[in-house]
Amino acid sequence: MTENIFERYQKQLLFKPIGLKGQQKLGKSRVGILGVGALGSNLASICARSGVGRLVLVDSDQVELSNLQRQMLFDESDIGCSKAISAADKLSRINSEISIEAFCERLDARNFRDLFGNCDLLLDGTDNFASRFILNQQAIEFGIPWIHSAVTASSGQSMFIMPPKTACLRCLIPDTDAPAEFPTVHNSGVITPIVTIIASISAATALRFLVEKHIDYDLKYYDAWDHRFSSFAVKRNDSCPHCRSF
Amino acid sequence: MKINVEFVGAISSGPHQKKQDFEVNEKATVRDFLETLHFDKSHLDFIQVVKNGKRCAHKDALKSGDRLELMLMVGGG
Image (tube, rainbow over all chains, first blue to last red; front, side, top):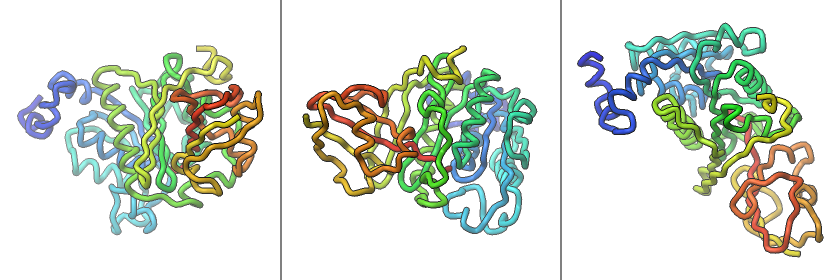
């Protein structure tokens, strides 16, 4: 580690559960982030600032004015530009000592291996369950742990997923697709604080996993309007068709 | 029999108070109870239920005095 790194991560190095060894583990880690919108840009920012050595950003969308309320990496000059590329540009100015790859693509079963096959951990920054179910299935098949995050209105949830040790997303939600009128930010809105809170919860889970291989078995649910927090253990569903073979 | 129900977060908007007692039939399951509420039927699979402090399955039976927390898994990002 260079002196510059000791200075950059000074306060994080003082945090004993991370320390120098943990910082080195973060530096050697490769984390993929699917979706670089509200949750994803916050997740990416925390990972980059914390010194996660390699980031893979995937998002096929462009920045819009309506994104700026909650998508922390972007400003007015980014409107119309690729989210993945704009985010990578901002992150490289925050931390020039990490590697960042940006892909303007939509995830499917065919490109998962190329995008995320070498990652140690994946982070969910998507805005719909259809993408999450693809991520869930592919992550199970490739044996890559991931952290589910979602927000709508003033509520959100975070959950670490690593079958066979934990439940998968389909253990929680049986084989049904999200209905068209399901509450999302597009029809129910979202307030900025819940985005940063849920991203922070998921990012803390990510850092602890990368440093300690700690596995978290609880789904965490928070409502930022009522300041109501609930955390409860989720057991695997033995009849889950997606992860029961593991 | 009577149960106590808390509607947490995104699920709390609706005709009910955030915490409310409900009368349910003997032998009713969690799912039976959920189907009596105002929710769109297509959303029911996305409702997580914590019963007396532990997550439970929708097929689980209810008993008098149970305390439920209902949370709708949200989908935005």
